[in-house]
Figure 1 (tube, one colour):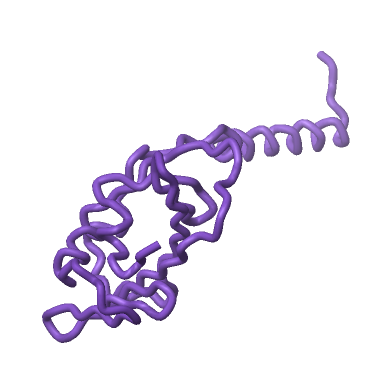
Figure 2 (cartoon, one colour):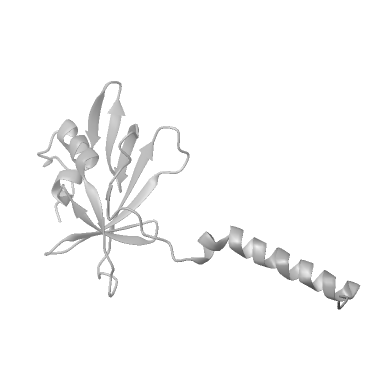
Length: 153
């Protein structure tokens, strides 16, 4: 029977440990699924405090809501605007190239979170593209006019 030297045995133990580490962490090496193809624009259980876009805002005022806007031609009620935000969804999409033009940047402030949710809306004829957390989506279940009624562009 052949005897294994101490050095060879140490190498066997080291390689066995490396293989065990790789097996325990194999899920990190495999490609990740994207998850849901459609996600809500704001989390369903979120308590929205304020929605800001430039100088325009939708602000919680006690139990109700108030629009603080720079123009007077807003024809959507604050409750309808809030409902549009709660019903809107994002559909995952792959972008061949980034849309042109300046985005409409919106920050949604939620209770219990120190950082707001930042959305960049790119309105186009065929769809409204949304960039959120460096991922691209298409807006569904709501229109940009419902979400940002003060935006008259």
